[in-house]
Image 1 (cartoon, one colour):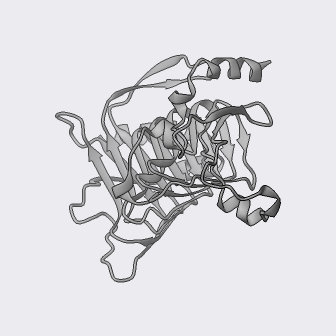
Image 2: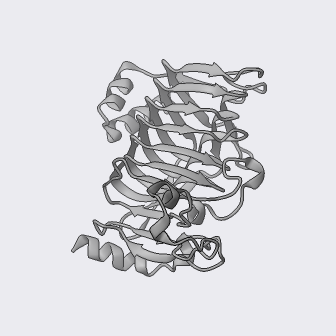
Image 3: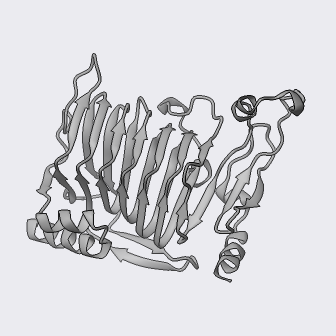
Length: 313
């Protein structure tokens, strides 16, 4: 019954609201997942391929697939396991080719509250390969995301724990980016990007939503991101950037760090905090916060982070 209500709510949103046009100009076909927990938009026409399907191998079918994936998950636990999703977008992963709306271009779009999404490999977007917005108490784990022209993962206006995952191959942009809210990264790999991470604070007020798309206002006069035991590999320029972009903002962007490892890219000068050193408020992760993170206790983790920020101020 809950899945039926969720699909009914999602059906009120047009396909154009969540998915981009297919490569041949047609609109994608909306289909329901096997377990009924989300919609997926798939391009079914392939006007450029006239080869008989009887003569195709499985590799040919995969490489010539014209599907465009735009999976939307709202407040539903989802295990993608070993599933593999790739969009055939020319120039994906290159900043110069970045275009389109994030909700439409993401292979995986996550929103809602109190849910866990894990598993799966997601590759190739002209924006964000995985896009998270207005999520509260989301755990994202065991995923591989690559080649987003903006980044493989962007999280906005959310409270999220990301762990045991890999974000890679945005060679002239960021591996991950956050905007507003509190985000925790534990035991992840960020690899083969120009910069590892970029944090922005753009507003002190935003909304999260629940499974019924009801909005809940949040007032947070800072943004905080935690990095515990992550690896930054083959990062060309900088590991961290922090920006308070509010008008008359006073730099309320906080970075919590412990036991992260770093390596640069051959032929370039790697800097942990960048030439301008814009991450000025760095806090050491306490044993209490470390234990809460490793136990995936989100409520306790966020409470400790908030108390630490207030103490720092």
